[in-house]
Length: 622
Image (tube, rainbow, N blue to C red; front, side, top):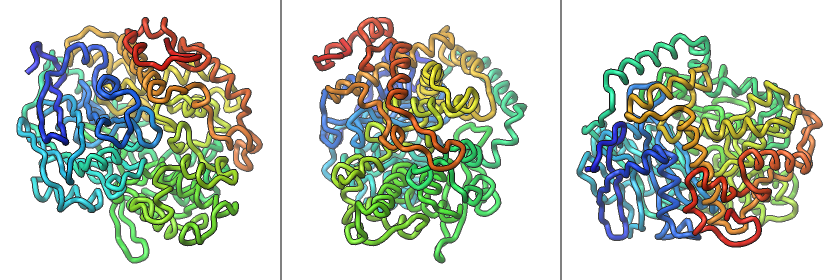
């Protein structure tokens, strides 16, 4: 047990070495908790400390860190988030993401704030955590099964009260955008956490906890928590949000010209009403599904039939509607849901999976690829063809072996100008916002530490509020969001109450000292978030010695091709304006012109220790 009580924490870190088949517990250091909070902060600091610079993602030296936060598992709105991170096989950089469900609280109830998984097993295994009883168990009978199927089998075998996370065939076969699945529809790790677990031969993690954890002021936490729920229920947006979840933004995104269509060739999809939130609710929805303590459940559990097969799936949520719907010109919500199910069972990220499929279809359309090279012809709107392709990718069969590496690697192999059709930043496929007419959103993609993902700064609402043509002044808003949003990840919280119904941030500042006993203000917490952001930026520089502003540039399509339709018709981002935004962003962050934290900024944030591991050369951080 730790020398000093850490209120709000399980108090221990679990270390699992698969090579030696040993497990041990270590006390959660108070210094780590105070300076990095938990969740995303723990992942970033532990990966920095424990990975040898330049480690190969698929090697014994890479590790997976799983961490909750101090507010996770409490009866508070949205207190159900857990983080998983590794050195990404998709980008070669920092890779991490968060997932809802019920795993975060369960891990803390078992007495653990984090799991460090290291080494490589000799045969398929799963990690069983039952309070203090931890074991590495044989997983031969689950290997090769789909993510949902394996989770059901493990719950049948172990007991319904175990919380289970699994990988699918895509993870087993090292697809670099393979995810980890939990609670029959929650996923994490589109940077390839599932693939790294697959390389380590870890099929699943099953957790049951009954220990609980202490808070500094139980009565105060209960009183404040009750107030937080009451505030949520009274918000005007409460009744509007719940019926549709994230799918409810589909029409608005399409109206402002930001809905990715036909591999981001444009930002407007004429058939969007066939795949929007209303279509989901009216035609396939069964029930709402939420995470631990959630008052505004975003999960929409659905049922549909495709070619005689009835499937059940959580979703589609907006990102899947965008990338598996409009981006592929799929015109029916039933078919988007089917592709959602196929990808989820295979353990494939629906964002990257939809982007890769769109890339292939455009390459076929433009003559870069032939049907013979692909194995069949696939056209826009071809649900059956896309499902076939996803299967090939997950099993690395035929052209799927190359496509399993993502669009950046595929374009490098195909050539013939196909780099223009590869929609990624830093090697990670872009999520569901066409940004040629949304500069703040584009800048958010450009500067996200993990690559082309929206969850670090969902800035498109700011574009709409202040003008989608406006370039100047967008950088400060992106930075503000990049501190607020990842702070939720460190605390173990979902952002949706704040984003979607206007729940005030001040409530989180109020509850934090009641839980931890620390007198940290909201500004103090934001400074920790800034520390984490700068650490992951330096992680990327350490792992890629020539990492600089070139890695922040968006794909060529966004810099050269005007939008052909929709509200943004004729718009694109010139290279000059893209670099202008970067200059403003770097200056506000206290970084140099290559986009690297300066020694003064590192000293301000208590990150001087990173200098010893950064490469020498022009524009270095040191």
